[in-house]
Image 1 (cartoon, rainbow, N blue to C red):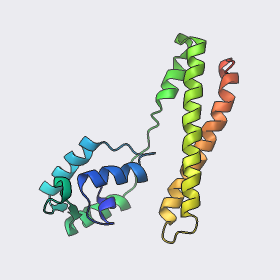
Image 2: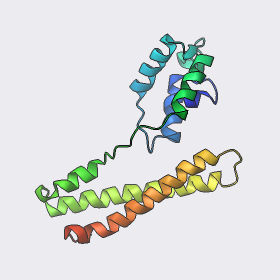
Image 3: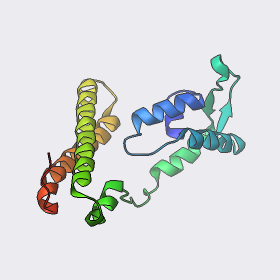
Length: 166
């Protein structure tokens, strides 16, 4: 959230919407988490709270202390990633799922990945000529590659599992 607040002061709602749009495909951010963190960051002096605006939304602005905390976090080595894919967990125990239902689940998940790839490619077109968007394009490039790999895996999955999908 501190990274997003570098752009401009935002209300909690604005942060939720911006986070979901910018990082929601690879980092889960919930509304309750945003408001809880904003309260904590306000208490520790990382952000200040402005006067309520329309709909009683309070703008939060990053402080110098918040900028320093963000600089420390963003320049540290990242935490180790952990793959948590609910579908992989289901596939691990797929012997207990009727073949027809498993096929429905796989088809639905494949369609979601194809839709996400299409959204990423559309965003890639929008950012193609936009100056100052190198970091967004870099994360988008990873997303496109990930979705392409996922779709290739989905294409191989019926043979790997011995299934015939519709």
